[in-house]
Length: 194
Image (cartoon, rainbow, N blue to C red; front, side):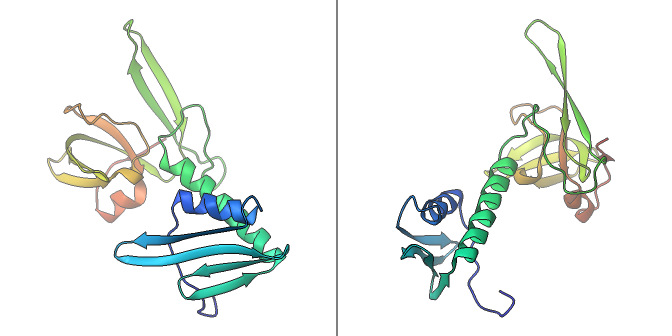
């Protein structure tokens, strides 16, 4: 990459899993046509002998040596784990690694009412780069929520940056824990999750 060679693609989970199947020698070869927006890119990966792999992305072929194969396996496993952790709803029983310094983690408290009228309080360790905001959901697409915030302004919030649970059916005000960069970029004043 530093020499300007190669091709960049955004792989899906299934593509990463199949690449790992070949790299881990569970399959000898695998190929697909990767689609992103309007661009289609053929991808193939296959073993040559016991120690080398041909990795082809579009018109760019690359023979990988043993050490490159091991590095690629580690990288793909890491990407797969990250995609799975951060693409799902936060698990209230799991502590996620934070991306900053140790000891600066935020705690989100969620109150829920049980069927017998008791209030259940949950705590979730989410990291330090999050902020809590209040608003009411007034619209939704597959990838975003339209929320009316406290000053009456409607904003679109990407679902991928919302780290708390929300209820689309509830039209009353609710709390959202979101990535702070989004709020700073849009000049929205909210409280830091502590």
